Amino acid sequence: MDYLLHNISINLKRIRKSKKMSLDVVAEQTGVSKSMLAQIERGEANPTIGTLGKIASGLRIEFDSLLEAPSQDTWIMSVEDTMPTKEIQGQYRVWTCFPYEDNRKIELYRIDIEPGGEYFSGSHGEKTREYISVSKGVLTMLIEDKVYTISENEVFRFESDKVHRYCNKTERVVSLMTFFVFY
Image 1 (tube, rainbow, N blue to C red):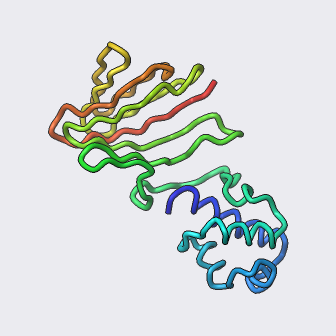
Image 2: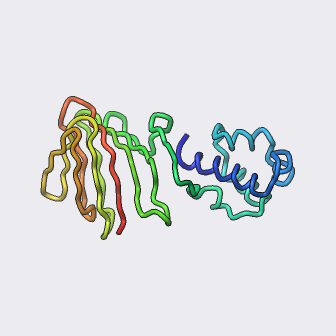
Image 3: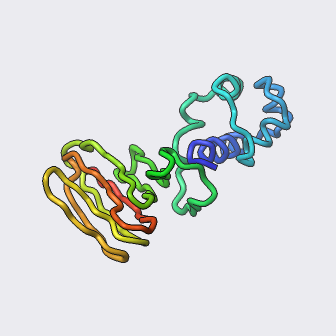
């Protein structure tokens, strides 16, 4: 389940329970079937924008309150249970683990780069710092005209207001976590 479907699932259930409404009542108010609502709450359905609009209208809530990151102090996310948010076959896969939120100025991504693969990234703007932790393989970072090599179990930090490229110049897949901090 990707993070948007996760958000919708958690938020719909939380809103319904806070209004002390059963699935039957929500179905009646929104025009969305009880079975579809239950599937959405379990994270098993990928609702259309129209369906989400019906839910928001029927519950008399703002549309984006279904999409926003749920306010949770703890959240375990398994990359293996999600679809990559970016992927080029034979090059790389990127998973959005924790996207930027207004109340948290950090983003977290998992990136796997295939042997010989590259992932290009533009500038992330001023006052953005990136931290990289390589969990498998050896990563080569090109930042403007400088080359950096980050090995397995090493961490790397840089100001990410410059164009940069993640490269795998080895014969093994490189896996890394990248954290963006906005300050």
